[in-house]
Structure formats: C-alpha cells, structure tokens
Length: 121
Image (cartoon, rainbow, N blue to C red; front, side, top):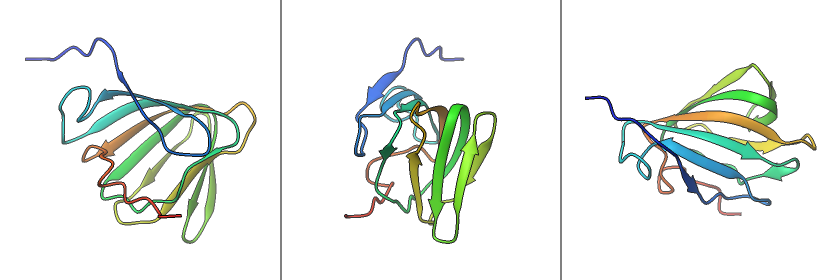
C-alpha cells in the first residue's frame, strides 16, 4: 500500500553555516533504509567537510549553483543540472554564490551520519 509523506523532518547539518535539510524519505522521517530523499537549501558561502560516503548520491539543482570537489576535479553544477557521486569516492560540497542553492539529494542506500565518512578536519 502506498505511504503518503505529509511533511519532512528537518535534519541538523554540518558545515560553516546552517543548511536546511528536509528529509522526506529516509531513516529518520519514513524509516526507509534503502533510499533517502531530501530537499536542501544552503546559504551562499556554505561549505562542509569532505567525505567518502558508503552510498551513491544523486543531486538535482533546482536553484543556484553547487560546487563539487573531487580528488581529480572541481565541478560547478547549475540550476537544471544534476550530478551523480559514487560510494567510496571522496567529494566535498559547497555553495559559492551569494544567493546559495536549493537542490534535491537522493542517497542509495539511505544517508546516515555513520556512512557519510566525513573528513576529520
């Protein structure tokens, strides 16, 4: 039977500035371990530590621009574009523009603080 999700749960974020993470589907809001889907809004100048997650992440930019650093490259993902990052690969996200960014992030399997494997610095 389908399960209607009436509202998300706001999850605490990591980084130099507050970022809004509204989890609609995932371990916290729907008790779903196979996938997490969240609407995110990060302010301009936001950055978080690098990570080497145990999940694939699919991100669609709705507004603004996301900077994605990898071990080999720096990518800028604009509104209307998407990026896939893969489990086991190092990645670092930030929003360089003053107006920040809004985006949808899908993690398979679901995001957990234990499986994101953030850098220690």
